[in-house]
Image (cartoon, rainbow, N blue to C red; front, side, top):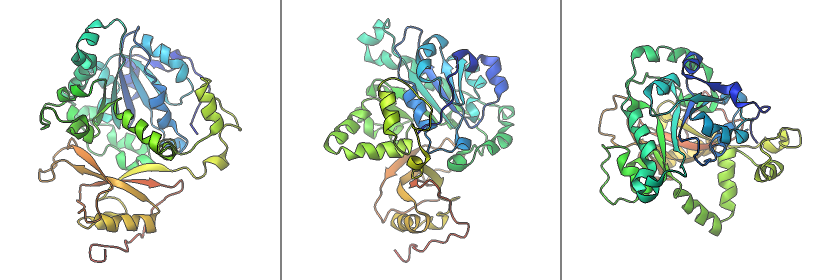
Length: 375
């Protein structure tokens, strides 16, 4: 169910700023934790576990670099010490030198998390201050600038990853912080207004309708309330989400995790026969993928072609917010349209989300059978 390794002490994976710079991370995942030594644990393992799901092959795993206070991460480490390719860097996302040390300009995704502190009385009296640290860290990242020399090793490092992440390799160098893919976790939904000043959301807009949320740039724990309500009225949906995120299930391992035993290796925990039918969610660019012939045609035709010829179940489309504006940088904002109508017209800049099987591989001679004229 998960990739794991024998337990390691925190000191074995801990790095300072100079060591992180020398490591030369690229196409990795950066997790910035804004906390103090007396902050409550936030369950960082729940974020890392899906990134180590067995639905991903061993050569598809990305390095995970956690930037934060070592004193706080020591409390999280008993739940993380079995995770492979996980590194701890002492520092803070409020310091740009630390962000450059973890190679923020070459990361595949940056996640900014906040850990509440029991001694923070100001946050208890003013809800706006509850997310002060993560908001400042987000604005700090957006304001960064990167020189061409910092992107000089991209071509070499892009060859390290393949498979499900092939479409997400860094192709063009990033010169500003706005080009870094970033998601910020908020404790208060109302604080979304402080993340990005150029969003055109009207005052009082529901959190679910704001541009940062629709574009996948922010998240709030209250979003899980909807999932809880849905699972109450439709219990099987939990297994569907479980399969999409983790690729499968092992009842024995779930029991051990629920009891707090952590990841334990062994032949009886995750048998190959139980994981052969795992699925995964992929994202492919429409203009470079096997469905590129559907640019400018109906979504319904693409859905049928993907299902019949590729064995893919298309979930939705990721589209740029402003199609009329010329895309000059990779910072163009996107939003996701789940299950659009069959007459939805596809654009050349669209990206497709789909479910794929364990051995999915597109045919090099793939030709769509349904097009704009036949659907």
